[in-house]
Length: 154
Image (cartoon, rainbow, N blue to C red; front, side, top):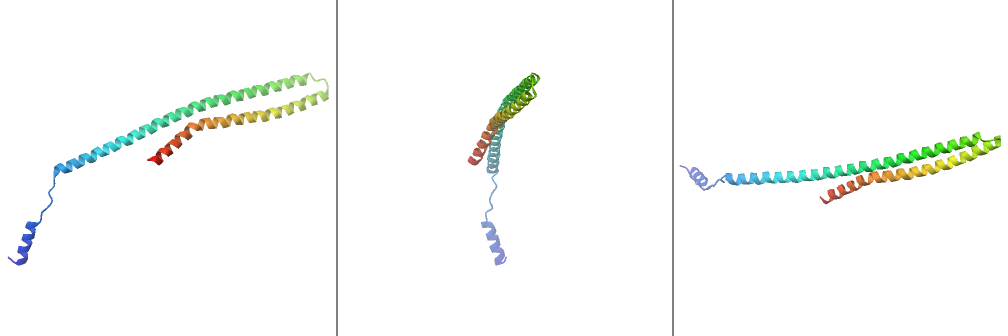
């Protein structure tokens, strides 16, 4: 045997190879799987909570929109009724007029009142519409702000 061969044999005898411990690997795999399951449960809980909150916001928004729509509809009906009554009253007054100057005076007065009434009705509708938009958007806005706050915290 040569010197090189003897040295190589001696080196091989002194080298230790790591042993594979199956119980440690199993424990590590189990811990990894349990951690994955726990993370999945947490993600599902967050998703479920988010879905429930979204459902509540949508229900609230729908109820508010329904109420606001009813208010706007009632205001529109009241406005139409007032306009119709004013027109019929004007027509009765015109039928009862005896002179052309009286007709002109009634017509001028009626048109002035109609313009004033139209301006007032437009203001009322603007107020109602502004309130409606605020009421309908309030739940969505607050839910969005909460979601953004939660996202920043996470």
